[in-house]
Amino acid sequence: MTWNDMPKRWYEDYERGRPGYPAEAVDVAGLPSSATVLDLGAGTGKLTRLLVSKFVRVVAVEPDDEMGAFCRSPKKVRYTKLSRI
Image (cartoon, rainbow, N blue to C red):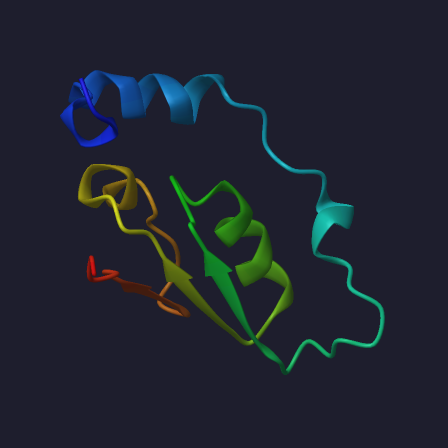
């Protein structure tokens, strides 16, 4: 079984069971809230949701379609499918 053969239920369990990040995780010294930030490998969007609360624009990139389906956030977030090379 490869990573992309995982049953869909796995992603739901991951989202439900994996602890979130503390709010302090997005406090980056010198980075203004007007910055555009990138969440590369966004997974289910746990960090993305925190970034959206702090920054004007967040771009979340997740190569796995099933995992990315959980990366739902306010309109400020643009989910981008990463093409495999």
